[in-house]
Image (cartoon, one colour):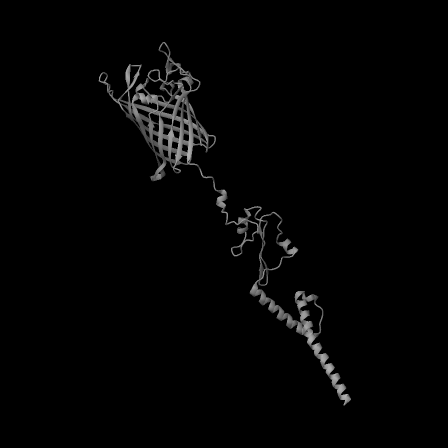
Length: 443
């Protein structure tokens, strides 16, 4: 009886120990399998055949579970090791953004963009975006400004140009006969009635104050002043008309009001049509003594460029609104009152060659036709006078900047009625021509 009790206790103790070992063995193998998965299989310790079988089963199950989890979540791979980083190309501090090539391992793809802080160089935001694929957004620094919040156009846009403008032109001239020393064709006469040279350097200043409605249309007001440079202050404005009181050294001209459209229309063949309409107020002494109400000027220009060549034809009508046909001024050369002008028509051809962006050569040639009213004094009753003139103006110009330019040329307005020779000799000192230089300042 006692033997049976002792035997039962021993059997129970053995059974209890066996169960304990059997319960602990799977836990130990599971722990070992976790270690094997985390390390390389070559470094794993040896096990019994049964443990090896269980290990293989658990390894296959663990690997399958890991692959399934990787496919579902696609986590980003951990940082590359120093060797991998060196192979792919390390990025130094302050360098431009460089996109590291994708590192593929199984079904997991790791793509990273290493950048310096965009706040230090805002332009790298564009580079960072362009160096990233369409499907992967660029990595930005937390302190970097947003590219879309500040458009690049705002940073590079120019300041809006003011519609107000100013241009000052000073036309300074001297008789060509004086420049050539041709005393025989001097424009003045001495006490003996012989010709003499006019050594005065005269100036014609025009001040344009403009307002631009757009890039083509503008309004201008243009006062004019005539004067000499350090000339004779007692010289009369016109020795043949003693009625003019303002001296030749400085006198006021008419004031122009302009409306201009530099591109009224584009005609067939790419020809540009421009238009200018002006009205001149009679602010000069000569216009007031003549009884002039005002002068209108209507210009139409047809121009086109062919590479460096410019060509333009201009038709300009100047019409004089007069209160009387005869002026109150009397010319001393004949003792008769001056016949007022009715109109002038200018027909001019301009040919230009732009040698560079700043240097140009221009030739202007054409005709000017003028009609003077018939004398309305019954005592004299002179007929209307039609005068034909040849216009010639060769010029070279150079733009030193956008605000200053200089031009040199010869201006010739030749009255064909006064031809002293049977043929016309262009740019001769006998034609009353003048050499000039003109400076232009504009803002």
